[in-house]
Image (tube, rainbow, N blue to C red; front, side, top):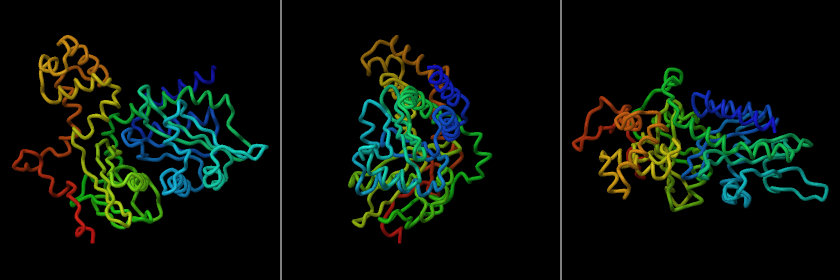
Length: 383
């Protein structure tokens, strides 16, 4: 019991101390290792709307690139694991244990053990899903141990007790101010031309524009090079599986800017085309409100506030009293750390407007981003 309390305290301290989501994951890996020792592991944030990893933090893996490649193939390949993370998401618990064959020859997660765990020289794996109180998934992970060192029931119970706390850490650090990182990344804020990536059916990058390469660096995904798996490949696999439906993923750069990635099947061969561009407020408002922990009703009030409506107008539209609107506003102010409607709008809108401020305006009044905004993709532009 005391260990579980100390583990929870360590997770809470990580969420408070971390400058951003990437640092939170690094600290959590340390904290977990102190209470549930592991030989290799990975944590990944996800966009709750699509539940695909948008980054990776690995520890203790001799070949993390190969580990990611194997995991992506099993979870998102053409022949997905029937006991995938998507199945785990529908279960009451967010934990699944995979290990060496038992004395009777049986084992849990047969395919993952054969094709992933044993191939990495490990003998045991824990799959983790991090969901908040509203059952939204904010991250996934896995911890591995070498053969002969299985995870105990007591360790599983201790981890199960803090999955929600880790989810809240993923959620809260997603919106943490990361503007200080700009000085340290050394990555240009933008690059002329459309940001377009084409991933072939073999998962190699067929085409990457200069602007897209800059976005990859700013997202912490590294340079898009052949043979290096990453979040873009996961998204491509997701699109192939759900074709013809496209995918929209909301991301945040290392320096704190919101980005929207759109992906769709490009042709009958299975190539996937992706575009990246700065997010506009309507595209991220649902993610931001969830990250701040707003209730559904508070989110509705926030949308009305962003539309410029008064307290009485909001009350009429939502069929509640003006006093109830005011109560919701107070809760919103507390959760977002502001003290007025003006400050609230400023906080949420600065991501949309400040990166574009000072640019030329189009006839419709919006910023002219013809040099940096992602243009529609046509077959002829890809050669």
